[in-house]
Length: 98
Image (cartoon, rainbow, N blue to C red; front, top):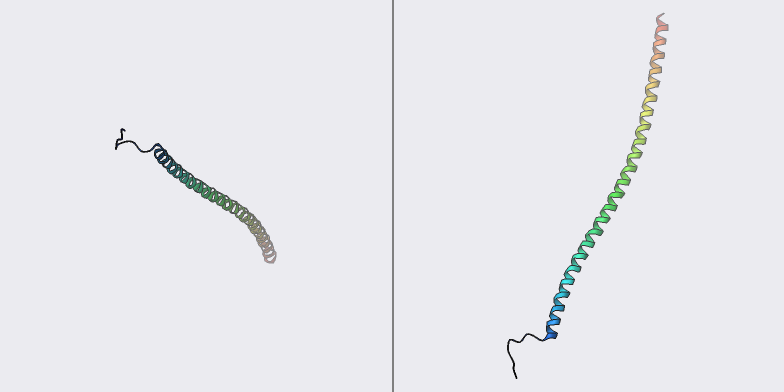
């Protein structure tokens, strides 16, 4: 019987060891993929939030521009009324001077 002390380990043990190593690598890659997916989901949520913010800001800007237009119109009406009043006062002053 030829028994050597440096005989490689049992083929079943070697296969189990290789399988264990492969599973560890698969788990590592799966963990990395999960982390990437979580980052992508977070970035997508942040993008949606940014889109919502842009929409709200655009609506607020439209509303502010509408108010600005109304204020400009009111200012023009007030200016026109003042111009009319000044003309009327000048006419009255001229009439009194004559």
